[in-house]
Image (cartoon, rainbow, N blue to C red; front, side, top):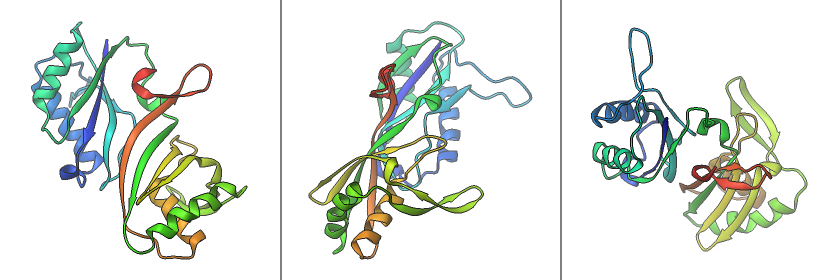
Length: 222
C-alpha cells in the first residue's frame, strides 16, 4: 500500500529548497509512528517520491508526495499522523491510499496551473502581451537545460493563459521533455511587450495528469 499526500507550501517557507524539503519530510515521516516502508542498504530512509519539485521562492497549494506503507492503515490515521508531524506552513490538504501498482505521481504529471502575480509599472503591459502570445503560431525563447542553453518554441507549452487584474493564470506543460516555467513565460511576454521583466510571485494551484481519454485531471483524482 502507498499513501499520497497533497500538501501546501506557504509563504513563510517559500525559500526552503526542494532538497531541504525532501530531508524535512524524511524526518517528519519518521516521527509519525506509521509503518513506513524503508529503503534497503547502509542508510535506510523512507521510500517516498514527490510529483514535481517546486522552485525556491514559489508557494503552492498542490504539492504531492507519495510514500510506502508496510502494513494496512486507515486513511484518517495516515492523515492525522502526517498532519501532526508537519508545521502549519506545510498544511496537509488531501490524503489518498493506493495500491503498490498505482503509477507514481512523478510519472503522471503532464501540466500545472499557476497564479502569477505581477508587480511594477510594466506588469499591465506583460498581461496585455498574453493575447499576442496566444495568437502567434510560434514563440521562440531560450531555456536553460542540463546541457546548456537552447532556443525552443514555447508557444505549444502554454496550454491556457487567462489575464486577470494584476495577475496571470496559466496552465503550462510540465513533463521531462516539455516544460515551460512561469518565470520564462513572463520573461517571454515582457520581450513581446518590449518592456522590462517585472517582479513576480508564483503560486502553484494544481498539478495535473491525464485520464484515459486524454483530458486533464488533478493528480489526486487519477
